[in-house]
View 1: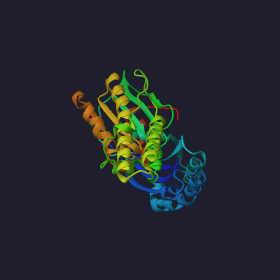
View 2 (view 1 turned 180 degrees about the vertical axis):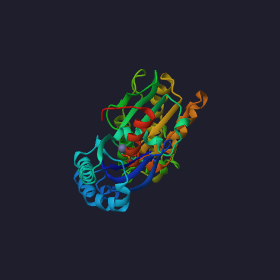
View 3 (view 1 turned 30 degrees about the vertical axis):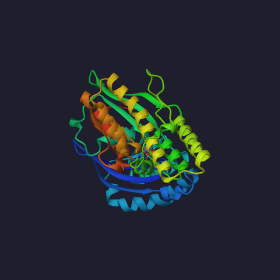
View 4 (view 1 turned 90 degrees about the horizontal axis):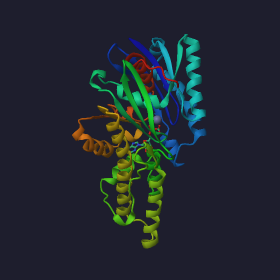
Length: 335
Ligand code: KG4
Ligand code: ZN
């Protein structure tokens, strides 16, 4: 049994959780988060200075909600060290160091992407997750493919794919903005896409880079959306509600197919038994449906974090990353 206090402040969520390993499961005991989205919304994206100021303002109140008695019972403090906004990361790290010094607890520095990768462990029976696993991390700031495997009794986490430009969540957000939607835009596009349909004239489609590589590019989809909007505006003056829904539909299809093709290819090439989708974009039901349909005949388990709160940034996954690497996978990875 080990219990940790986990802290995540890498971007626009101030999040603290108590996460434990009870000999079988990794579970959240208590978790408190503050999402800064409404403060960044009016600027159409995260403003780093505002993010760090808000982390600074909120983190003490969040720690008070977690409770001193609970904090004292933790064995260690785990904090996100990178990657992220430097001014935001420093708030979490400073608080972790002060608490560590005051209560005499060891500090563990964790990697944010590993947090997303191991977010699938939260509340899940590890014996039911079959290895190797092909992992797609898809969010506003990152878009990568990893393979978690076991050879000769040794676990290995291999980074095999990445985006060359924008992340898929970033593409959702930028396209939503061009369509007059809110920030962040992924959930909004997904919602209005339900009433949209394909419009062949607009030529918004997936982008597949080299067949034998696991590289993504999403800035091209953003450009296609930009030119589709221009094309309609030149012809009709402005976009109708139905045009907006159609472009949302095509944008989602383009992103989903681009993401799906490469992660499925990786899953098959590495003979994975599980395909895991993590990060904010894993909340997209169409992506899961598409990948499930395409992998049905191969008998691959398609999984994502058990709760939507574990898909987007949270401290629970940071605790799960430390505990999962230590107790399940015996991985010592450089952060
Ligand atoms: O993991 P996350 O909370 O933060 C980063 O580390 O970036 O991911 C946020 C991203 C945003 O780009 C947001 O638009 C996207 O996840 N997202 C979605 C959905 N919900 C959140 N994208 C597509 N469909 C959704 N339902
Ligand atoms: Zn993230």
